[in-house]
Image (cartoon, rainbow, N blue to C red; front, side, top):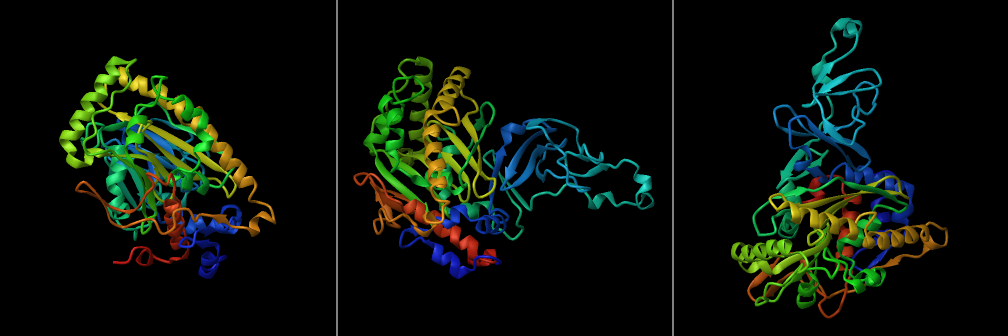
Length: 450
């Protein structure tokens, strides 16, 4: 690996000891290596199938620095293509979303069908005597694609493990986002559009924050004091959270993590949204069905997390997934999708839509707090003196356990119970440990041994 060698990565990242060099956030060489070592090999979130419900539907997304097209071809099959003409590289799709019968390059007019085939070349008879092999010049497609309960993930690496192998034991926690509120598998859809905004910081700042940073409560003090929620009179999960065990869950061998809450085994169904009877009744029925379907697992619900490297599910209200797109070492383009149960009544969806936009995203109060933190932390780490001093990630060292059980319910992952300790940095250490493995490894055999 050109640039920083393995010994350099080990010097910069001491995940076991809890110190991380500021260099990995601000160094151009390290950033360029991340694109090769991480984003060209990992499974990355692209979008949701509900964005492309009909044949011909498309939505432009991003995989690292690469612009990609998520589309459903005329036969109903889902594809992810590099958004770049094979002739001179121009974007063949410059709209965020829509429906089309073909993608037409506005530079020289090459056109592609929705299954990626090159179907039109102006003045073809003048190129190579009209013998251009168009079958060789279709849009570049991802090596592997997975539609997991409506969530579309893809990788450029044919040698990467399957998506479920990549997910590992994190599946239990990720399902808290993508399964219906009443415990049915799948059944969610994206509501509204996608929030998109820019932050002047490295992509790892938001990724690590959402991996499980409970410690920055002071940043959200104003939101927590008013109990911002859909009804304007408190979040519906506050009571549940306060009665639960607080768990930081990490999978260091995968890099994934999530904040989780485990309700008491005899907890009653919490009342919610008294000011909106129809919504309150909907969630009451969902909670009852959830208990019936999931057995002991009904007690588990999730908070923010990060699926390595840069997708962050938030598995409780608001239910969202964020993508932290790298745009150079000093800038991140943030995208956020909002999820609801597809078959929820229209008043419930509208109720949640209003809450989601008040709570998170560029217009939400909590995200504005976070952006201030990441912006200033990044700016304060770029200087010659600042880069000589590492960040401290020592909180909770030695407290995590690889076996956790409560009233007969066993949970996977490296778990740090922070119910009384308030916080740990176990999840962040797991994230950066996996980051260093990706930066050092030359193959998936090293990253995920048989």
